[in-house]
Length: 136
Image 1 (tube, rainbow, N blue to C red):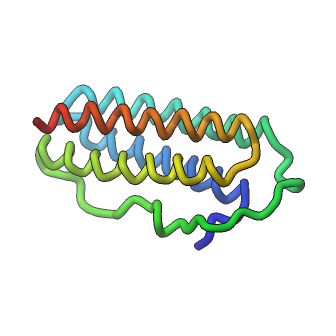
Image 2 (cartoon, rainbow, N blue to C red):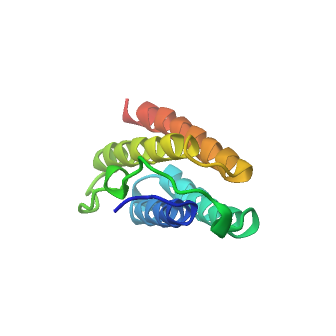
């Protein structure tokens, strides 16, 4: 499915934030860091919904091309059974989310949404650094 409008991109971003929160909630027992990440994703989901609602009238926006949901959809799989597996999966999920936010921010034409997507992409990158340190 194409992410071909501001609304579809924002809806996907809100859904992605919820899935990331759910994942970190499900592995929070392995490390307190995961519980912290789950709380952060809950706040990010709320922020994304606020940006969608407050900063644009979607009817006046131009169509967006070049973004496919399948390129960014988190891969469904079982919850890891240990801390090491949870970290490895978190790294894959964060890299995927970062890719979505970086590539999508270049397609948007709403200033506040662009800023939010860039910030969220940077936060994913920061978490990738943290997770790679945890892996070592």
